[in-house]
Image (cartoon, rainbow, N blue to C red):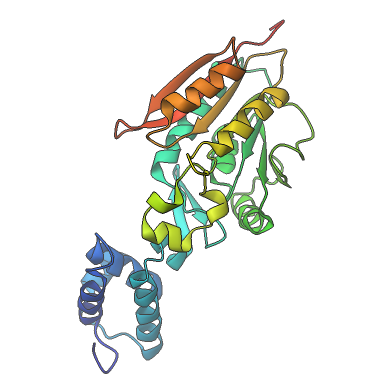
Length: 291
């Protein structure tokens, strides 16, 4: 480790060496963290690699590298993650948004687009966390009113910050809720990325730093779906077509689909793969009576 504040090139080499055993992408991690500290793009870092850091920058960078060595997610360290083309503030109160969850938003937007243009739609995102799903839907589908529900007041504080950031307070309503209990009206579309992981099988960094309330799916990973699906059947509007879209683990497709079919007997139920070919979303399409 350099004794005095190093140049950018020296700082990056130091960080890459420290991160080699903790991250599969030590070079990228080092560049992202140093870019954040000096408030410059990675391209500018490379263009000015012989420039020395200040003492304060060097200390801040070493602190972030130490946290990353402890497997803390990069998104928590820099306070931001992009999701569906939008930036979101994140910290340890919420899960880091994952790229695979974008399929849930994609399918929700496809269903919204399939409905008559003049039909107003009400959407609920259960377990909203950072608000990324609810906000992405409200942003890309302006005709929707979206509820974001979460059991965690701490998570809702993060979501509130993101709603304000994207100026969507008129279309996204955040509610503290155990399940759908606080929902004030029937909805047309339910979306959720519920807890479905087995805590003893997930990545150590995720288990160490991300909120277990949003991760723990119980002994078989299906606990949340057993509660969510029958509850969803009670709050989806019965007079017009509706939908329930749920993110799932790659091993859960048939089990969650079977649960959905047992509750929505007349619905069309499909398991949809992500770009890697893994089961990722269970889609329940409900035909309304009198539609």
